[in-house]
Amino acid sequence: MRHLISLLILTGILAQSGAAFAEESTLPKTNAEQLKSACAKAGGKFSQDAKGYGCGTDCHGGPSTDCTVYCPIDQKCTAQVIGARRPRSVAEALTKQEGHRR
Image (cartoon, rainbow, N blue to C red; front, side, top):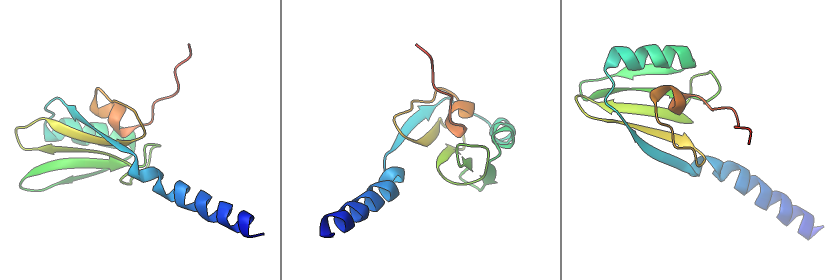
């Protein structure tokens, strides 16, 4: 019985730590209007302040912080995504791409 409880606890810890495996990527400069448009298409939440602007999604068409893009004013953007993905565009960073067939 103790082994079963230990296994369940370990499984819970590993499931919760999945968000810790986020990858960070640098994306090209994107102006606020372009990011706002891409954010709306991805179903995310756009925000802006004096230092920059960003968008966060759940990677599946809803607002959250699982997939985020932040762009400081007049600088390249930074994307943080879950898993080992390497997005090359804002749209790729804000949505989970379907698996590729080989």
